[in-house]
Length: 422
Image (tube, rainbow, N blue to C red):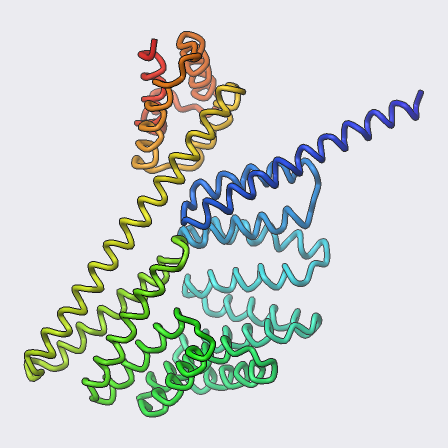
């Protein structure tokens, strides 16, 4: 009898783990899909649900990866406080499990956030911890990246000689490993440092070498970036015609890049494109009316081209995001029809996520469309359900009259339209 009870318990536990694993995988796949089009809020929701499922299965490795991914999403959203919180949770698990590779990844991410915060001392400490792990694991490329990051900190401190030494060490490592992309990136960093030290010819030499490697690797993003850097070097040398030519080629290459990269990666390129616009502005300013009118007209043409491209890219990203948003909302509402009690769980997430009015408005639009098509919907039943859920939420989180401030357009309209769709 005892063996039979144990078998039943083990069987139930196994079923729970299998269900949890499949649920986690399903949410991970939807999260990745949302992430690829830059829909970070929906990606977060799916990854949080995957994390909940993983908690039940006790899969520590999966939990670590999910925590790092959630931290990465918050980092991309610019919410560095939340990003660090999840990186640190993952770091604690890695330390307990002796997972050095993921520990190194967490330390590096936290170092990046510290660097953005201007906490350069802390950033350097984290990068140095990464270096120590690399010595243990023998991960040479990760060691080179960590040394390069240390160089970035010293560069930000204005300690150019120390920064140069770190860059030199990183470059040597990448040459030994033959990692050409990292070689080109370090050469570009050295070029930027040389330009900072007013050694413009040296800067040009390093950027041209980086550009040569990027072209050989057919790395279009880096080609575009390094073309722009070469243009800046020519501008610093007073060679404006050459600068214009390189800026022109950079713009053309960025066009090519923006057409092909996933939406979630476009913000970085758009930011670099904006910097290119600023450089063209500087070029016009430096000429102070001495530039040939045709050249001025050409530069203004490129500036307009950049602005038009950025506006079009933004519009395309918003359209793609709305397409994913609409599909996602439909999925959630379909789920509510099958299991209405999930509505309370999801409303809690809505409150916690602090959605924007635009996002809530998007929900409202899709809800209205779908409710009109649901012939099987029982309005009175739904009215009682939603009313009860909202009432419980008010009691549990103490919203009282402030409810309408948190669950505004989207959720309130959901309730209103359910009432009216009789």
